[in-house]
Length: 233
Ligand SMILES: [Ca+2]
Ligand SMILES: [Ca+2]
Ligand SMILES: [Ca+2]
Image (cartoon, rainbow, N blue to C red; front, side):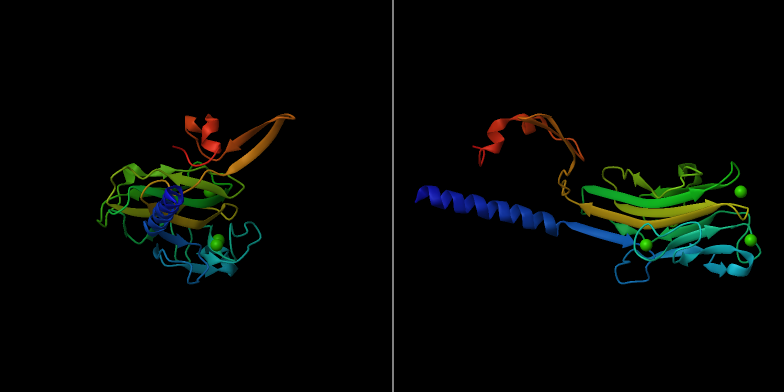
C-alpha cells in the first residue's frame, strides 16, 4: 500500500514537473509564410519591393530559380539590392519585434540563411540587442558566410540574464548574380533545458555493444547502469 502510494506520488510529481516545463516556455517564429504560424512580426527597411523586369528583389516570395524556401512555401529573398527599384548602396534590414524574455532563464535564437556569390564588398549578417531600445550598435554586427550555397542555420547565443531580445537581419549587395535568402527565424525562451537529447547516430561496435551519438552532451550519469533499472533512489 505504502509502495503503491509512493509510486503514485512520484508519477504525480513527474507529471507536475513536465507540465510546469511546458508552461514555462514561449516561442516566436517567422517563416515568411504570411500565415498565423508567423508569430514574430518584423519591419523591412526599405519597404519590400519585387521588380522582376529589373531582377531586383527584397521581398518574401515562393521558390525562385536560385533558391527554394528552407521550410514551407515562402522565404525572404534578396537579389541586386543596390538598385533604383527601392534599394540602394546601403544595408537593407529586417527588424524583429522586441521580445520580453525577463521571465525566462534560457533562450534559443536561430535563423537560416542562404548566400550565392557575395563578393568582399557585399555583406550579410545580424545584430542582437538585449535592451528594449530602438537603436542598433553596428559594432555588434556579425558578418556571415558570403557563399553558403545551401541553407545554413545560425545559432545566436543570447547572454544569460538578458531582459529583452531584439534581432536585426541585414544585407547589402550589388550585382545581378548575388542571391540570398532568410527563413525560419525562431526564438524559444524557457526555464531550464526543455529540449531532450536526440539520438543522431547508432553504431554497433560488436554484438553486445552499441555506441550512441546524441545531439547534446549527456552528463556522466548516462554511464551509470543503475539509472536504467527503474526509478533511482
Ligand atoms: Ca518559410
Ligand atoms: Ca537589377
Ligand atoms: Ca556583388
